[in-house]
Length: 85
Image (cartoon, rainbow, N blue to C red; front, side, top):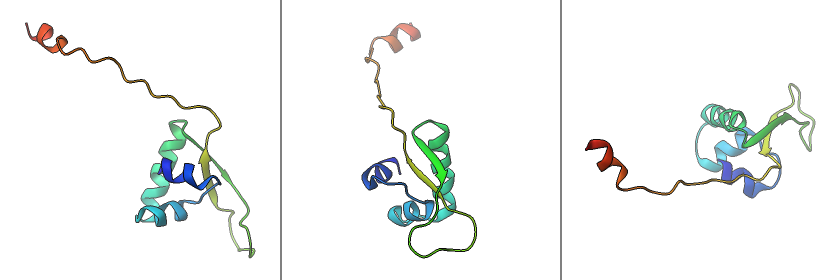
């Protein structure tokens, strides 16, 4: 989901994410909200483009502006042997 949204380079709705991944809207929205809670995405309500629709404005998601870094710790293969000994 995160990669799909980054590739779009624009705010996307849960429906667009669900269609892009071949899943239904409800699980897509659930996982998108989890990515917002983790600080990887931001969400807001946006007026639809094109024809004006009746009802609430759709919730859209986009990546945060901050740089995201992942650090993988060094492997210590001897540690499990030390623990078991």
